[in-house]
Image 1 (cartoon, one colour):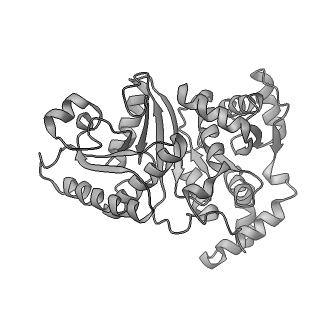
Image 2 (cartoon, one colour; image 1 turned 180 degrees about the vertical axis):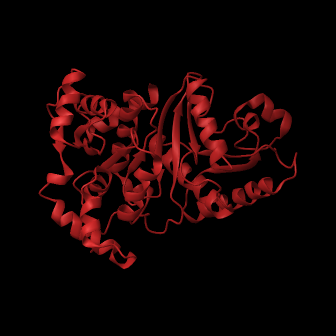
Length: 350
């Protein structure tokens, strides 16, 4: 709770509006209730008013201070539909299809985010990843000069010797199944930027593999080696002060004693606070293992590289997890252009 407690304190000084498209989900309503009670900002939940009120009553939750919008009955539906149509008509979208899409909470929430009616978006508690990402990629899109959208998990473990006082950033755990060299380098740099933005520390980025500095030979090892070099170059171009090393096995990345035996003269080995996985299989499995077996607090997936702040939470997330993600997304919104200069300058369809 140390990390998320600090995030909450920052947000209380700069409250934000967060939209939750899954307003009929009990965990979402619980998180929205806590978000409002902690004075973090204004929660907005989407869905059928009657169903939301029924869920709230069943779970003994007050809806005071929580704004409820039914997209299908919203006064903004017509304007949102026209905006979405202008974005997608070259792709063959018809006006009737645009209206049908914007009647759905995830599309409506993405348009609220794009139109500055919300500062951040949280979804995924009852939807698969594709249903969350598709509206965001079609409406929000990626930030200027960003080539790769990805995701990151922020893990808070009890052992403060791990990572940065017990906090680890792990990526990509939710978007790109098999990143190529350039994508892997982009993921590393984006995650390092997020770590620096949230913690104000120098990121120490371990590019993970089953090999440490040539202890094994395989094409995937070569990919990690090449991505490490590219990440250093990209970070230098962005004037991002961070250390990158790879390829490293996870014990060499996190444990000083192992790092001492396997390699020396590394600013990262044994001290990593950012872990970059070679593919989605390893990243997703590892993040869930740390959360379940290590009993870590898990916050994510924080989406990286989008033009506006958003997150795709796991269907296994608790209300506490969702609250933590909402706080992280809202804090990002306070100075999002520090993460992505030039982000959020144009509205959809302009």
